[in-house]
Length: 261
Ligand code: ADP
Ligand code: MG
Image (cartoon, rainbow, N blue to C red; front, side, top):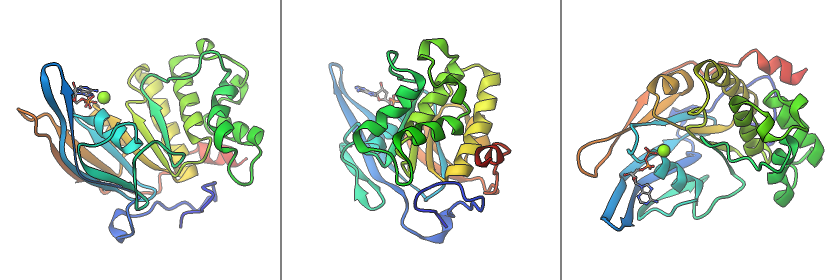
């Protein structure tokens, strides 16, 4: 079962999509049309899919297929033209502390240290129960393996390290959901492979529900329980196909032991 405070217990099992429990994320008949100088642009049409608690779902599709639009609507950064997104049964109308976000461009504050960036989200809502703010920052930096970079500035970090800080910042308030839009799109292939492993370790340790956007089908297959495929059909209509990969859910990685130690 999901531990309400979301901390590692060592007996992780991910919620099954087939149990019939209320989906953590429910995207229902969502369409989005942008009005532009050149007329309306239908970015997504009638998109419907669910993400179960603790599930790792990827949205895959070619450039321009509407992945980021779907991501931004789930995040509450964009309002759908039709349909709705519900998180834990509540309709999404704006961003909230229940959804941590990670972007391709790490979007770190350059004037803040690594620790300062992770601390950012905590300044408004405070640390999760059982943590002081400093302890929470420390814990999240441990999760991403960057305790030794706490006092560094973003410009002193590699691309992979900056993305790790972005993940730590998104996890700071302990949101049940992690939304990621092409988070590893700008890092080199070798670093990306390392980050994939680390992300699965973090997922296993924190039991977040993850919705991961990528144009890279191999990345999606490696990471996900299920894949929602946005196809770039002619015209404005995009299809959505959910593929059940039927992967084992017990992929707790080596780093889990290290985190507990
Ligand atoms: P993806 O992330 O899969 O590359 P996007 O969601 O960014 O796709 O874009 C889908 C379509 O919607 C594209 O045709 C894009 O040009 C258009 N679009 C996205 N955002 C806007 C916007 N703010 N204004 C106008 N058109 C947009
Ligand atoms: Mg995009």
